[in-house]
Each structure stands twice: as structure tokens, then as C-alpha cells.
Length: 257
Image (tube, rainbow, N blue to C red; front, top):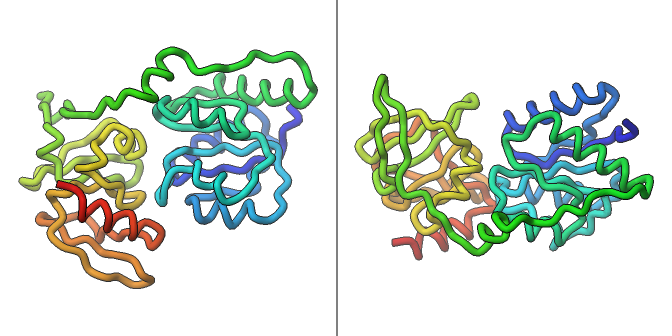
């Protein structure tokens, strides 16, 4: 394996740890030269000349989708996109990408992507990956999550999304809390949820929270031009909107019904 220098653009710590582990298992000599968590950080990093063999890039970051990076800087390094859903596949192949891995992917899939890059670098024939009919369908179809099945003791309970005040992740564990203050474990990542929930009803506040419009009581101005959310129910920690997402949040809050 000749691929040595790797850049990871990913805002979920667990995903970074998992990817790093698989890469080093494939080749212990691989060097992770940078781990970037946001669009803003990635734009700053790639604004200077960067030498690397591959970039692994999540699509949904805390301050927006990673396609915004390409509107600000040119990246001539091959890219492998990673995401929980296939709805961005067509858009991904319009930029400098060689593959599109759907989370959770296995080490063998990762190895296959790296081998594909090696073949491309040596100009060997390689398969041309095109979006499947399913991917094309999902690009134009908006399948929003209406009800979620959650486990409670020995029961499985259906929870309507209208009942949800917020989703929260901590220590690789995701939970939902209803407007009544009841909390349930959720077998999904915030990234996957952010692609399935109605953008009119829910907002990805930061890496820890997705909040419901109905749950927001009011907003306080916080340090560093950020915003702090006050909910109708108690949250496990302060919910802070990053500076880069303040304008987007204000627009969402004013338009959501």
C-alpha cells in the first residue's frame, strides 16, 4: 500500500476513531496528517498548499455540508466521501471524489476504496462507479422520519417526531427526550438523524444536539457572537449555536412553524 498521508474531515469523534483504527489496521505506516471538524476549519486548512494522498470527508459537518468547502477552495487531492445516507451521491461525484462510503462501512470496503485509488494512480483500468437507481431516487425523494421505534425495558414504543424536544449525543450514546421530559435511547447517529428529520421542525444546533422548534423557549446572546438556547424543558448541558451557524439558525427560527 503506497498511500501514506491522509486527511480526515469529520466532526464525530467516534467516526474519526473508527476510521483511524481501520486505516492503521490496513497499513500501520499510514499517517493522519490532519483531522478537521468543520467547513470553516477545512477552508482555512486547504487555503494553503497541502500534500496528501487522500482526504476522507464526511458530508454533514457541524457548520454545514462539506460541499461548501469546494465553493471556497480548490482541492486537487482525491476524496472519499463518507456519510450515513446515499442522497448526496450524485453531488459527490461532481467534485474530485473517487468513492462514496456509506456508514457504517466495514474495513474491507475501506480497503477496496484505497486499492481503487492505487489503481487510479498507476493508470490501471478500474471500475467506473455510478449512482444506482436507488441513489438517484433518493436524490429527488424526501423520505422524512415520522415515527421512531425506541426500546424501553422489555417494550418497543413508537415515538412520533412531533413528541420529540431534542436529540442528544454523549460518549457515543444518542438519546431522544420528549416534550414531557422522558428520555429514550436511540440506535442512530445525529448525522443520520439530521438527514431524516424535517428541516422545518428540527435544527442541528451543534455536534451534541438536534432541537425541535417547539422546544425552543427563547434565545440568549452568548460569548463569541454565539447563541445559547433556552428550552421549555431541561437539557443535560447548555445548547450553544456556533457563530458560523447563527444566521442560519435565526432564519430557521423565524420561518419554522
